[in-house]
Length: 144
Image (cartoon, rainbow, N blue to C red; front, side, top):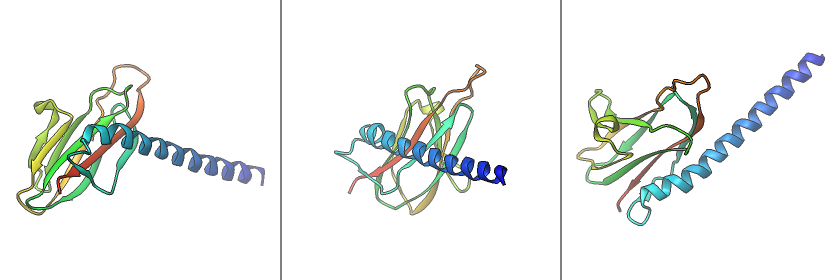
């Protein structure tokens, strides 16, 4: 019975810390991500994609984009994180943008069709034994 109490306590603490980390990442995304988006020109979409990641991690964001609309995709990381790599691809795996060759932290484009795209973010692996962890945010905005 004692072990069950410890197990429930551990689960409850895990949930609390996970929610706290997500809240910190949302605050980070709103502060740094919206500034990088240029909210004077671009309207942020309703959903903010922010998650804590470590060096060597990857994650994908699936987003719909609509014909004729101008978009800006911004990928930002916490100050302690290395330079992030991100790609924008369609479902046929055609690369529309790759930050490793383009060298930017944002991608501006006009969607020529209604389409679903994949934004893949990679935190480069570290050569140290203790990889850094920090918030990563993907912000998408459009011009009305």
